[in-house]
Image (cartoon, rainbow, N blue to C red; front, side, top):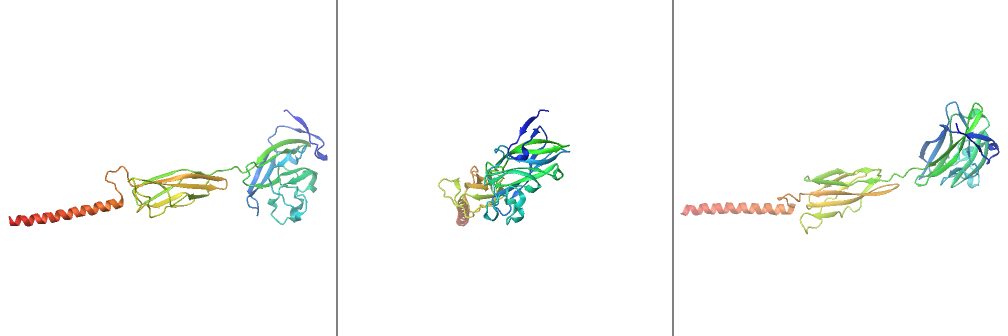
Length: 318
């Protein structure tokens, strides 16, 4: 197995040579959730995991000064004093939720702590247990409270110290903490109906809210040129994409509404198109036209009856 010597010179207890090597040990995000009483933030907890039979006894997120957690993060400033809360020593004095503070989740008195530094854009520190009985194969050792919608996230790099059978080694770890942007997607919906009420569902992905851009002014293409836009009933649309429209009284033609779906990361647009009537049906006409046609047919029928009666009377005199 290939190995190389690494000297970490940032802290006194690290001025020894360890061996870094390939291992299945890793750092994973073991918890992620909204930061308590801090809107728009999410708190991540990281857990270091070693191989069976090994235990994690320390970490170094200082190195030569270039290691650490770097990116936007929240820090709790106790009593408005410049009292660093890099480690969890002062958690009992917090007047806010502990999840608001970016910190290493161990008290400095439990071992040797060096290189502590924090700010709105970084957290650095190195630590090693003095009593190795406190160490274990898994260790949730740090939490970071960071803005939920930050595109770059928090980058981290450092080492964890692993012990087995009296031998120590360093495992390099790097990564990025961020909540990936999930943009909304709104697909088009096309409907055609001969029924008075039309229903349909707009296909949506990651959409929290869905609204008409201008419910009163859809794009309208009449089947009978020159007809103005007219529909007495407004359609309805909910955030799940359920669309409904009572088309009674609407002039025949094609209607198209623009709709916009949003979530905290952005927006997307789609359309809802509805065809009312049948432009290719030779006997199809608008309601008003049909009414006039019906009246005309009634008039013709009445005229024929009168003509028939008159003809019958005439035949009697011949």
